[in-house]
Image (cartoon, rainbow, N blue to C red; front, side, top):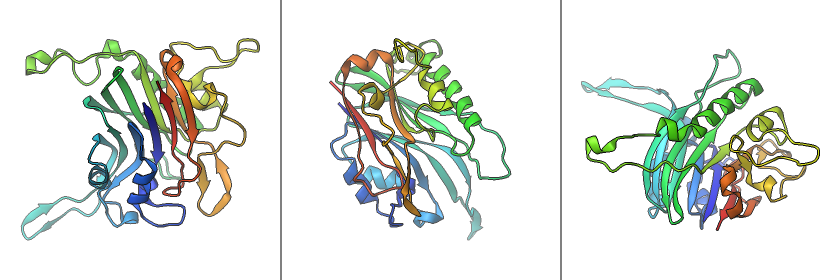
Length: 286
């Protein structure tokens, strides 16, 4: 199974051109996809409904979208009727396999005066894959404040690791005529974490390293797919500054539960994609 994560910057590429078809082409061949910066009614992409756009471009995929942030964008009374126009900003998951349940996990945030700070979240999807049920999360963390990212990571890890105790989107579904949902231990966290390798936030996610054993595989610490395969280096990058293409950082990751590491076969960054200021990152499980 191939997994991909892509912060699509509301469909606008490094060249400043809005081109969702170009983004969809970069996603070809993936089985499970996590998108960030998916918007509805945003003036920077001519108010496109990107959820509808990607569902139309990729009709063979099941999908779910949750806006972490929604604010008014010009609602009004027109001809005696309330017309709602709302800006939505969130994360989307697309899957070739059925999505059994989904929910939004809102992440901690603090009020700013500058720079802009909006609500961030993780879209959770319980997916029925050919290898069994798997939890997948499309994640987008704060972009400006390391302490806030650490708080978000701490909260997210607690939610992910306590899934079987908490029960996900629904438990006891038979009361509503639904089958009981599975509660798999394994999970995948993909997205724009806005942190750099081995920084404080990265260590909060993956744990510290030991001088002899390195970074051990532990239930409490998700595993960076790229690093686990020895493919994360000081030259790795997943973001390019649109105003200076020589300025690059590695901000996007695919993390997986330690129990999935025996199935990890490949991991990569698609440095040829131009549909966003970020690059797609992906991995493959057998």
